[in-house]
Amino acid sequence: MKSKSDSREVLEKILCQRTDDLYIALSGGIDSITLMRVAAEIRAAPTVAMHAVSAAVPAEATNRCRELASRYNWRLVQIDAGEFNDRQYVSNPVNRCYYCKSRLFDSIKAQLEGNYCIATGTNTDDLGDYRPGLKAAGERDVWQPYVEAGIDKQAIRDLALQYDLGVLSQMPAQPCLSSRIETGIKIDTDDLAFVHRLERKLAEQLGDGDIRCRILSGGVVVQLPADSVVFNSVVQRQSIEKLISTYCEVSARRLIKIEPYKMGSAFLLAASVEVHKRS
Image (cartoon, rainbow, N blue to C red; front, side, top):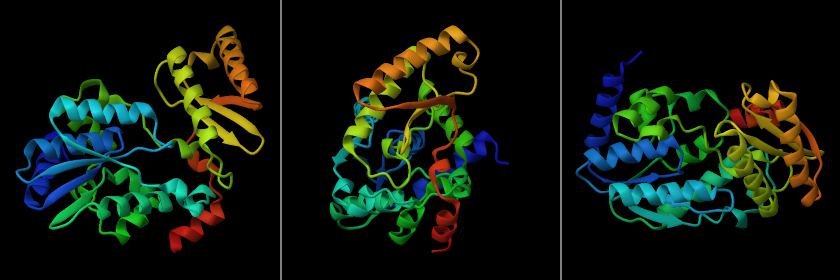
């Protein structure tokens, strides 16, 4: 296992070895934020943040990118990747992320010319999960500096602290809002807006953490951190259930249950995942 200093040294070395213009896909999550922070600080060649604005991207993520760009004097380019114009993406198949990332990288490439490289914040932990977006990246020669440096999620959080990103280093995972929609249910902007509103309201009540509002064919499932007070206090649970039920009723939705958080990959059909892994 690399030490904190080793991880930093390896990453900085490979970033500086590239002399072409570097365009980093900046999602607003800690992985891409840290990569941009490091690269922009140490590279002599231009480093540009490319952020996709979309109904599937929480406004907080976009605002975070803008604030950090202003603070650190990054060049930030905001784009619309147009994934909602892709019928395959909207149909929400098991490999939805493939179509999303394909649109993203193609949209970035369409704006560039000359000697350049596109990079993402993919880390070694991501390689053990089903991530069809990695296939889209591979097809387009998108660079993954963390993977090349052998850096995992915890090492990224350590780097974030070393580069003065403070509390952002402990920011929970920030997957796109479309990840809350059960596989096979079409991606709809009204559903995404509902998910975002409810998750923000719950965060105001309970604090940040792994909070997910998931849209299933039978209704709404809300997932909260396993150590949430909601699971240990009848009064707190009743209060949160009332809040969620009210939100659901206003949107003519049915609350199925509240449960501890688990990854959205539970939506994926195992057989379909294996098919796509082999493709």
